[in-house]
Image (cartoon, rainbow, N blue to C red; front, side, top):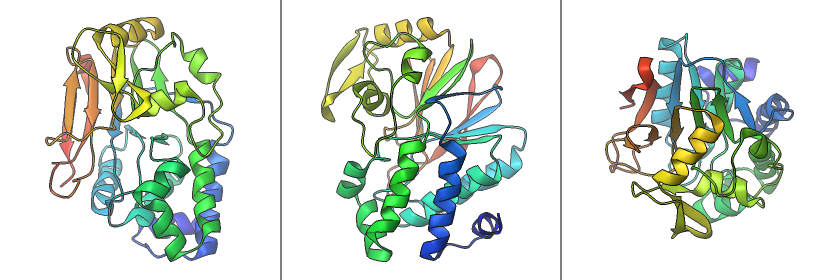
Length: 280
């Protein structure tokens, strides 16, 4: 764990064998994990898209120290677009390995080979290191869990509610072990977006496979799984977070996206209220 400690203390330039070691430890940590991880507490802080912004990730690191009785759930999208993609991904892995009982990494839509090629992570990794190093990161993509859940309390994932799913067991039964999202349910779990109108599902301009989900779909899903509040990421909101469906769905974004966003993390409080915390 000396490597993990050095990253937490500020080391950013890793040798190829150090990335192999770090990513291998993370793969070992999640290889046998289910798609949906049970979380044992309501004391949770949710982290949205980071997209290669190391400054925001360092701010999350400080909150992990400050709120040392809380669990932290990273909702995915660690690289692509931002200026320090490799360093950000490495730091989130190190934070997870250093705090395995209270820090969870979930898989977002950008934890996919196809998207990494399109939006920058593949290019920067292969240019800085090699294709083999990118494949080590890709194997991390494959093992990351899809969601967290606490019975009668909360559910969280990167994107949103998928079609034709009515139980946690149905999500658990899907195969996530692929560098891309071949399974439509898992694809929608990381790509779908909410809309306030009262409908079930509509086409989403992001992809022919993605959907918008309305209040009817959200309410039905939450009733079926017996959860009160849902957290997700995936969308940019200038204030860093947005609520939907009578505050029962919370979307959080934890990167600046240049200068477009005041990035936040969101803390779940008593009575299912939320406390947005600034990152910069």
